[in-house]
Amino acid sequence: MVDRTEAFRPHPLHRLWRLLPSQARRRALTHATALIAPRPDRIPPPALHGLAVGGELSRATGLGEGARLMLQGAAKLGLATWPLDVGPPVRERVAPEHAAEMNTPHSETPPAGAPLVLHINPPLLPLAMLRLGRRILRGRRIVGYWAWELPTVPPDWRVGLRFVHEVWVPSRFTADALDKLVPGGVRVVPHPLALAPPTAEPDRAGFGLPPDTVTVLVSFNMASSFERKNPLAAIAAFRAAFGDRDDRLLVIKVGYPEHFPADLARLSAAIGGSRNIRLDAGTLSPRRSQSLTASADIVLSLHRSEGFGLVPAEAMLLGKPVIATGWSGNMDFMDASCAAPIGYRLVPVHDPRGVYDMPGAVWAEADPDEAVAQLRRLADDPALRAEMGARARAAVMARLTTAPLAEAVRGLGLAVP
Image (cartoon, rainbow, N blue to C red; front, side, top):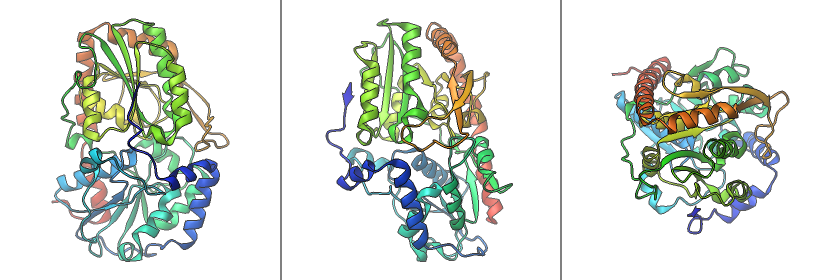
């Protein structure tokens, strides 16, 4: 196991925050901050100038990457942009080797009338409003860009509607869920990944990957829910497919492991003494993460649900064959013509962290036998891997363009050059 956590520890206040039960922590923060947070103008003024984008711009998270991609997409459309970095609930240090790549420099205050799109989900939206302040918020349209991974949304998400004029989401799956809160008022704006496809080069030697070994990659962020990402199913499928063959290697890359030691221990215990399964615990910069994906032969995601699926999407853009659960947000850009979607059954949600536990909530359990068959099929056929990877790249280049963002911006009343 590669462990890079010693040099990068969370702030003591962050560790104290994590000791509280997750549901109580989330609700207390949401409702307390909602009472005192500034609200946007009741009637938004006409949109002018360009686009301000706020979010976790300095963090290696899905929401952070989504905000960075929107800034790139807006600039590609010829719009002036103003980035606003809004950090996590409790400030934490960013590893120095990652900071330069992930940080988007602060600009001047966006001019009055420039719409602001906040890549912050409703539970943390009031806190973000407090941090931004009334001076930033007034005199502009506020758009909430929200990502969610279940067909139903938590009741406390309704609080977020007080702080936005409209809602954008990255997938039709999320739109269907949020339609219950905002009937007919949700716009699907996928991440415009095709505007700047990843260009990272493979570095198998740098990652210690044997040249003649078929490498399967599982990559996820511990902060994105261990149960939802479901790495234990990936380990089980890999073992069933290949046993202890030394010409097959499973690499499990996890980000932010220092925040979730119990989950990291579960992962380590599941791997046990397997010589052909490697756990790499440490947060990589976006560029280095893409390089690891480019170095793999197959990318595997037996997730229980995805709001969008950035890891599969980036892997497909890099020309990698992807095996993934055939349910939720990733199915907006993935199908059997360009990937290996796995059959599933829907089951009641059980989430030890409490984030996704709600009455009637369901998510997917991928078919283990089908996952094993697809792993063997792709591992044994280099030509098939190359063919599927080429189709994957072409599909995502066609499906994740800047066109939906341009349409959304025009809907705000801005002219796109």
